[in-house]
Image 1 (cartoon, rainbow, N blue to C red):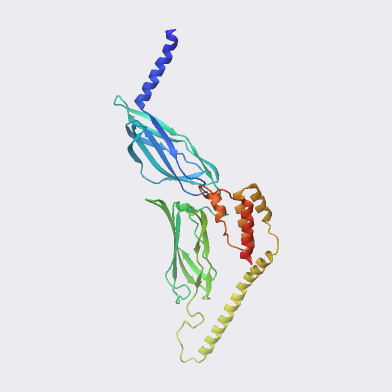
Image 2: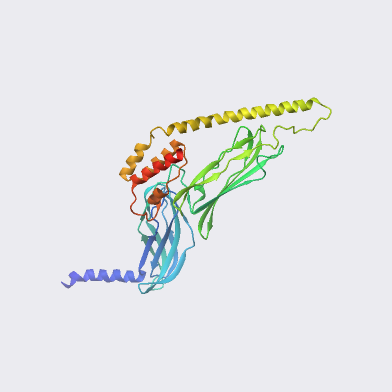
Length: 390
């Protein structure tokens, strides 16, 4: 009878002795972010609590096609009293950027420790933190995902673009800096080529810089531009949508259109021939032809705009092809589909994507306010769209 209980007792004493030699260990993945969108930075703290004298360590953080990640601060080792016991604390800050919506699993994370055992020898232990799951929301609208705490676009011109001198080259330098994201999330370089302009493009500069506030993404584009035909024109602008993680809404970083051409277009850039009385007549004819050509070009370019305005005016009297999708999404309380259908409705009306602040708070706020009624929001949204379209 004694031998029946002797073996379990010996095993228990051996296991408790091993645990005492290795010490108590705990590793966790901590985060306090709710409702992140695709590409938004989620800061994780990997915290270890060790009753060990650690001499070497190696952490294995898993890669995944579902997210990008980067360490954003130096490891912090310090002593801390936990439940009355003085433990060795380890903390590592990691930023994760989800690349898809839905549940995104991060981990498990393993920390391999080399420590000094009770008999003064070195031993190795592996401590594993269980995986955590982020519930990632789709990126608002049908845009290329780009989320940041702050984004600044700077557009620098070497000269007045509409008053260029003959043979003068305009240098345009555009810089985008975004806090809380990585460089490859910044937009691709826009194409500025036009048939009436000669352009040379400098190599792109794109980098991620670590700061005390986290990653800072930067991209620099530079072009050398010169009029080809000399006619006055407008270099079209563009916009870069991005999700403002501080205010939880889509913003547009505009690259403004600029007038482009020679100063005094139509005058004679060459030397004046005082002996040639007929040169004045020729210059006047060139000026008149240039004026008429520019007028015809202006009218030709305005025709599509007039046709578009007419089409927009007709559409206010027609049922929207996206009305049913908006109603069904609101009845299902599918807020992501409701937003996508509402944005398509504004595009069909020729209106900018605005008026989503209340809906976006429900979708992307960490603690959405209660009492949201999708059908009531849709009714107010459609009324707003009609008033802006009139």
